[in-house]
Image (cartoon, rainbow, N blue to C red; front, side, top):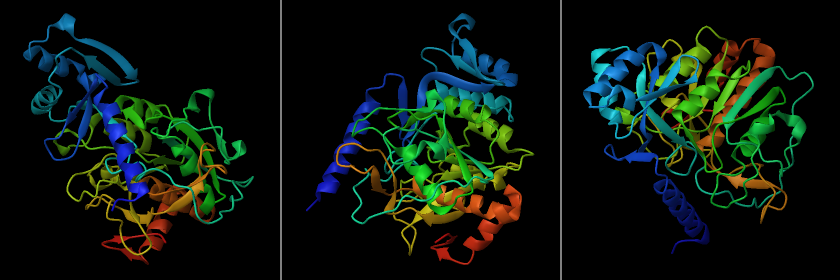
Length: 383
């Protein structure tokens, strides 16, 4: 017989699906068996390749006047046209210009089962949990949590993070992805005092952002050392999202910097999940992306995505951290599971190692070496 928590999760998922289906601008392609979401009528392209992209749209019957363009970030253009066959335009441009950076404006989510967000709704912890000490005065590692906004009604002290007015969110809806960034920040602080966290809001309260929004956020980040991305999605044709690759390349190439990304919660072992799957590509900066699966203390969680692109596993089942004070969460703490919360555990390990390693690259090497002393299924992992 289904439990109350099962019923709650099913209702949460049903409400989320209904909300997404109601968005007139969102399209979902289930041809691969996994939902590939993108914005209708939009094509993202590196500005240098805008000409070939417009030619491809012209071949679809789109007149020049019908195609509008705007710059969403330096070097990145968004083309819009009603009735555009986004996938066909992408293939056309790539077919004639192999190195063209062009693709759909994918939609990424933080949500249970499907994406790199939480696996199911949070629950009230059964056991007491003490708030960690927080960052030390000499904390040396600058961490960007690119995620939802930060909620003010939380046990997380404001002195533990930096945020602009635009990076806050006050939406209190049981069907929304509230408290996600709060929770992730608490996970980091629970394992290190050597991190200074900067919250960067890119996901809305429903845990949704477009590839253009994520790319813009990455291209305009302040100077940071580690980026936590507990979000993601699948892509058209399973190919690397081109504009996200463009942004990550700008962020990581020739920099002492690393991106730690959640592997996603679909239980999928076949399809690459982005941005984590960039760790398994041949890009020059692939080694600076750490793809993190979740384990439960003994094995990889059944709901965690897996594949040859996974870098390591970290604890992601029944994690307790700082949440939002509302409803039944009277002390603002929650019990939550997901690869979303395995990723910041690795972020914390890198920050902690940096105190002796001296560089982010050397800290990553130390963390990878430490992970090799344990295994969770086929992957090295942190306890």
